[in-house]
Structure formats: structure tokens, C-alpha cells
Image (cartoon, rainbow, N blue to C red):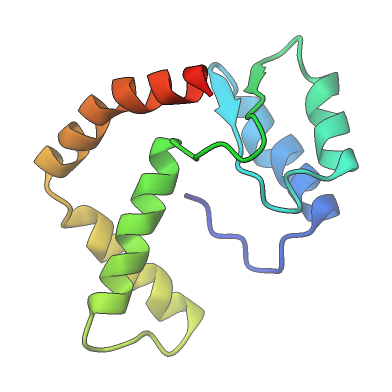
Amino acid sequence: MVRIPTILNAIRYVEFLRDRLHPLMLFCYQQNKCTSHMSRSANGWLDEQTYDFSVIHWPPRCSDINPTKYLLDVSEQGVKDDHTAPTNLTEFWIAVANIRLGIPVERFQKFVQSMLRRGAAVIKS
């Protein structure tokens, strides 16, 4: 998870991909279906990079089984459950970091074990 200190639009998303993601690409990249991710400029840039890394093209209306999405959901629920809501972005990021550090390893292991079933459902659809 990367903190982006501004509103993410298509142009900023491509800049982020170029500057932050591209140097790290020794793996497959999976994005979700948010507007900036689905923009022509973002997809055009990703298509131009196919010789450097692989992009997983996600079917429309398909559930998101990205492990990062799971982590975001757990973090979001933790912030909602906290008795003292963050009053600014810095407090929010500190709260998220503390929540992530407190997630038991067993919870992630259970999620990873469920990925085979989820992956089979995606392939079937």
C-alpha cells in the first residue's frame, strides 16, 4: 500500500506506475477496476510495458481476489472499529499501519488457503 497525497486521476496514476511501480516489476501486476485504473491512458501505458512485466487483465464484473484488497478491507474495518477516529490523513495512515501490524498471521494464512477456491470460481466464470 502506497500513500498518494493527492486525488488519483488517470494522469497521476500513469505517473505513479512509471515512477514507482515500473522499477519493481519482477512479478505480475493486478489492478482493480477503479476509474483511473481503467482509463485509456493507464491501459495504454501498461500495454506498452508488456515486454517488462505481465499485467493480469481482470474480467468485468468479476470478484476482486487480490490479496491487497483483503488487506485494505481488514485495515478499513479496523479504522472503523477504533474508538478514536483519525482527524487527519497522517493520523489515518498511522492507524492503518498499527492495524496492519496487529493482524494475526493465522488470519492471512486462512485467506491464502481460500485463494484456490476463489481462483477456481474466477476461472469458471
